[in-house]
Image 1 (tube, rainbow, N blue to C red):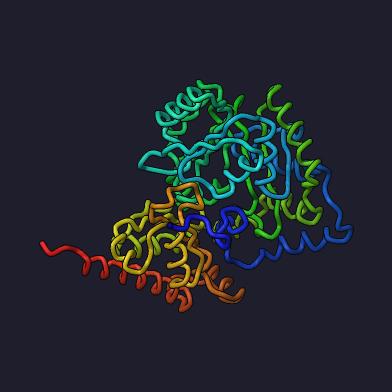
Image 2: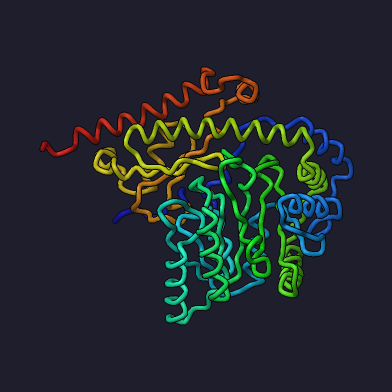
Length: 415
């Protein structure tokens, strides 16, 4: 019998985190956190005045008007999504694949989760026709769909949804009475910001969209958990925020004061923060493009990465060759590539993809080195891809995929 979920590969405890920055902490952020570390207390539930004001200003600069009474903060986006799911009730729809942490929130509350296919050009946003058909089927079977979670700049696929697709999908969701939760963690990590149009669902349907942003995406280290939510400016938004604050209070989910100070500083986007973010985005974009060239050049499939610090690779063309190595599903593939690359390669099943599909998410952070000195050097080098440790890691990636290509060619039937 095929293994699908052994104890040492559990989907929750062993699920993959957000793709890390792989970079030393920005000194200015560290100084702010250290200066606030004296009392070592916690913010009020939902965030203190300075953090909420900084979050409002952050969204206002992006054309999303926000006021403190319709914003909440928590120690990480999962806590906010859990609270939102509890407040909204009903069944939850997500794209396939989706961020690894979305589905467990709903499952924890006993909610049914339904995956909806995405279009060929991107991930993160359900195909509108597939969404309508899924809603119809759920209701025909006695379900109660109330919420769809999506991401216009996506983990795991690293793609950015075209504005026209966002329009169609959000309109379809609104027509069916669904509340849209837009995870915009990666919106500030666009690889070609001047050439990529990102549309937040809250811009087109402000009355039915809640926006989530985990600050570990653009600004903070993963070990400093902080996230913010922006609710609709209406009675629904006020009610949702109140219910979310109730859940956060029950969970004791408060942002530590030093982390809140660093988060507020980062959300203010001073020059030190924006310069580091721009440099980090350029670096990860360069590495992502190089990794994409390596895997696609060997014959694997992957959409060109447009945002974030990762790419999503389909090794289906190597299925026969991988089978000779004992790889038959995404968990086997995760184990196989993690061992050969010496870096995490979570399988697509972690993101709600089919276990039988041979897909993985590769992060760019591990390519930047193993010490703070190596990682810092990547930020200042004129050609970071030529640094020995980066070049070596990318060469290993290419070698592993080239070997799979060669194995696949040997397994091909003679014509």
